[in-house]
Image (tube, rainbow, N blue to C red; front, side, top):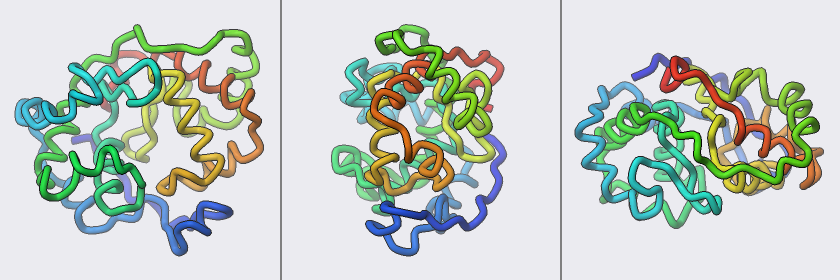
Length: 222
């Protein structure tokens, strides 16, 4: 398990707050804390993940059409946050909930799956965008995204910021739009503020840039 820092209590502004009053980004509720403190076992996680492969595919490679993200090499803290947020109803994901709810997975299994996914090598065959606005995407990423997601898209496990390098373009595009429009309710308010003024063309440009980033192997799962 990577070390993690407790997030400060940050209230979510704007339209997302309207859909979920009193929301605090990354609040450390008991189940999340329990999963973060558990010692995940990658071998057990590989078995527990078998029920997830129908969507996320073998090796957690996701789908190029953006319907499911690539999870291989993602930080365990990020994965635990997202799974427990779905279970708690903080992130609405009706497709995932039946596979992640308390009847399907124990808290220990969440930690195990996160350890397994973190251990997987990310591949370089992910889906990318049209490639026609990469300079604009690089500028936006440097200005608005780099301080959290890293120079190479490696993310930050201790701050619960996901690895975006090598993620599928269409998934990144969809999720940034969701965050911008207040549809992803467990978002960091700092990201919402960063992208609230983006046009769809801007989202496409920065998503294409992120999809093409290649974080060094040493940054995987750290």
